[in-house]
Image 1: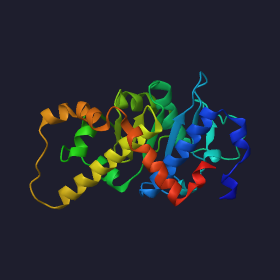
Image 2: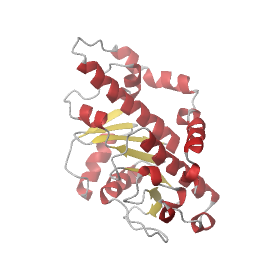
Image 3: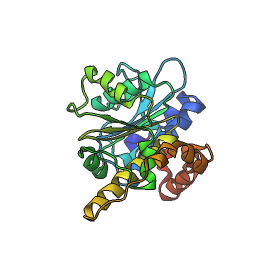
Length: 255
């Protein structure tokens, strides 16, 4: 744990970058807390402000429950580590995140997980079904990307970006879930909805009875409903409470 705390980093970065680092480290801790981490093999990134198109990503090999603000690695769109960092990055993580950040300038955070529920639904031909209130928000902004093996090849990037389009949710077939948001809080809330949708779907299907689907007209108005529910604040409505919870459990993510 001591190796993942680098006290000198905060004095070397802007206050804005440090706040992004704290929020991104918190997001990693929340993913671990919800049981969505796949040991060290998934990734979340946050775009830094400025013209250089740098983003922050996890130090490869650290458990999500260990990640701190100062341990996050700054990289550019070519995969080069920016500044002084002793940590490597996940090459597959770089491929996916650099593709999205280069194409979607409205996106501040890209969140990708390999949850059991998410992969289970991603393997179903029908994908996400309108079976729950949570599912209508996902279905209103959802794309699908077919599996092409571990995401290591640059040639996959245009197809992944095209399948994401302008959506918030992307189901990676046979692979997992991906969400994007203007902020880290928005991307986390989207993933909470996505994973919950998949968990509910698998439980409903396991009951063996005939399923009742939500009417398409209700799905069509889901984005408007979401704005009313969150008071146009998106993930920011829940984020302060989530940070308070982390502070009660273990505030070391702030280091």
